[in-house]
Amino acid sequence: MTERRERPRTGAEHAPVLGSASLNPFGDLVTLQHLCARLAKALKPVFDGVARADLRSWAEPLSVQRWSDYRAERGHGLTGWQPLAMGAARARVQLAFDAKHLFELLDAFFGGDGDAPDPLPVEFTPAAEALALRLAGLVAAPLEAAWEPLTKVGFRAVEAGTLGALPEFAADEPVIVTRFGLALGDRKPAFVDILYPVAALKPHGAALTVKVHGVPAEVEPQWRSGLTRAVMGVRFPIRSVLAEPVVSLGRLLELREGDVIPIDFGPEVPVMVASRRLGTGLVGTANGRAAVRLTQLEELCEEDFR
Image (cartoon, rainbow, N blue to C red; front, side, top):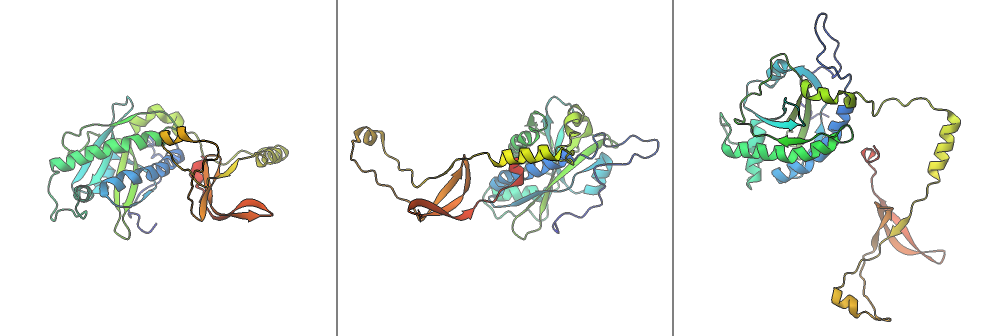
């Protein structure tokens, strides 16, 4: 995307330097990248609610960096470091907010136009610190849900003490940087980073190295064809709901044979397959039988089937 932040970043899979340990013990981290794609969708309603706006959200390619390199990349501007506990790990996951973005969210949250002070304060206000803690609490639930297909691990917000104080990471400590973009309309996007210390992820190394979306193994063609025919023969109930009138309990108890319950429905009705919405259609007749002509189909998301 053209709106992505330009920065010199290496990929998640690193070639170790002679005589040094690899920063990343988990391989190519494609599983974690897919997790981030799911999480980006779940973060949208969180930040929509705080910003009081309809934002776009996406996940940037992740990277593995030394803490000192990451700090140098961010520069010396004011940054909010909000910790999250990850399971029983001593190392904390960190939410990193640009100060300008956090103050914009604070202004929007309290009914403003989402403008940051100019010039920016040199430290965070108590209100900004409270908002960062609130955001961390709101992010914890979708973060747990995104991790659940890999491993069940709990996240919870932890008071930062001083939001602008740097986390206690060693300079050469490796961190996995996952970055999420948020944008309103054509405005310049803002970015929120979630940093995972490699030490915090080591208990979940087996789950992270599973190839969820790897190249499928070759299977016997006849078996594949038989399985495909069997799957294509699975039957699904299709139903259309014309109306769902509501009556009080008193009226329900008074109903007798011959009573008429009025219903009201528009020209288009929902069409359902099992519990999922297939689309909408027009009610009519075909070959002398009641029928529904499909006028719109719901878009199917590939993530829904993973």
